[in-house]
Length: 408
Image (cartoon, rainbow, N blue to C red; front, side, top):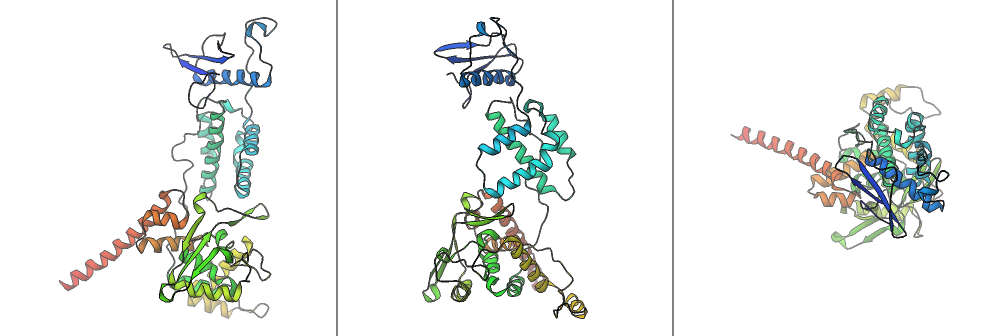
């Protein structure tokens, strides 16, 4: 069968008149649309797609045998609605469990209520622009960018399936990661204070995230077999082999590969952390190869909610000001316990990863080294930490300049 563009079936040829001619090969014979030419390439390709479906279903007939012997080609069947096509796309496209849950939520909450009943050819560039502008932006930047990126991916699949003639999702700036929150890296003193405020058996998890750059799900899925320690005095080395991560899909914990293929990596452990790692292995981890480094008392995986609550509590204890601690101590005790300081520092567990990568950049890591340590698929994200490092260097050189001026 004839092919036009790479990956397409049949041929579409632009005429000098600006119209388009469509044809395909069947049993060695070139077959052209008996109705003549089309006004745009999309209509031509939809006609080809309709012909191909007839061939695949086995109900293709010569044109002179269609519609009671007339030459007229029947109107093409309407394209599927976005709701139906997106459901088919979700079913045939493999996704990680957590990703599938996220996509289904974006479809249910933000895409299908407005666009679900529209047929694919009715989702034009102007329709997408109107939909994008109608979404509430306050406090939901990341979710809306993710939603737009999902719609763009689905419509790209429809374009590949030759159901539409062009990609309608071309809104400038939409779908790019939103910088909704900026946080300074934590200091070594702050990291140590947070770690000390965690339950003792989980203390190492904070240190691994802050100095090795692992994600929360990667930290909680490390096992004894993933730790390679070579003791040789001052030359001792240790490596964490990241091969799995735990994620939440709906109400279930799912263990699978890391977030990206690049997430499968070996991460060196800073020498200062090796004694802490050894002590943790000896005190809190069973001797079985599959024993978790960070686990609940029964050895099972720590769920997201329990882990995040413990981390937030540790932050409130570690980062509160003296005044906030005094105010908490003056409050009536509940259940014999002093209330926590009345503060909610804007620190997330992911900030520990930011701290690690920024520290590596300040210490001189190249973009490639940062990318490898973090498990990033592209250098673009790693570049952010290099920029932070440059900013830090600028501050250092500014202080050097002040010292020079004082001396002069």
